[in-house]
Image (cartoon, rainbow, N blue to C red; front, side):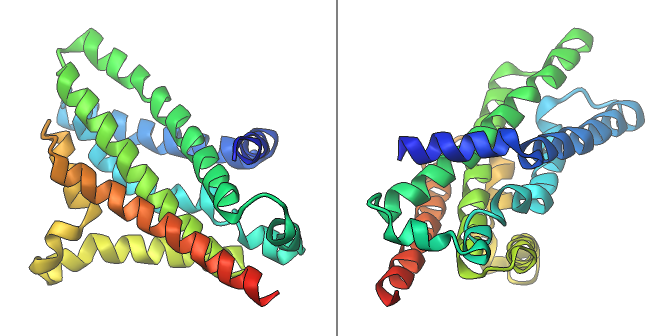
Length: 226
């Protein structure tokens, strides 16, 4: 798994993909930051991540849509399926490589906390709670995006499917209140309030593990057919 992780992480750094993801996120985050500060005079770090979750909804496919779709389209998927390395190690390697890029992106947002700390007094504990919740949300999004990528050889289809499901998860609770406890965005909102409970953490972790396992199952079934 470690070899796959290193290979995939390098591919993000040696291609525009990693930089596009980080750049897009920070660009949009900066815009929301300026609007929040100058229009609403809000100096709360956690408030920025409510918009950050919206950004993540639309740019996660930048990291995930090519994970397996590109391998399948280029025919290199055969090398994965016939490799002595297990499917599980390949999937986990790709997943953790994307998670590392997300971690780097999130670390860059600390400069906004430093700016707010200079001008105001944002709560460090709430900021840490928000960062932790945001990372869990990002892992959940990455896991589903990876699963979507494993279903098709078309990166655009994987992208549209990923964003479509994220948007549906965002708005469905408004139409069906019973689904509210399963809304990842709603769960993340609790972290921005400094609320950390085992229930929310388990929900994020379970969602992530579920779609990592489903990705492994999809590839295992494809391997058995070959």
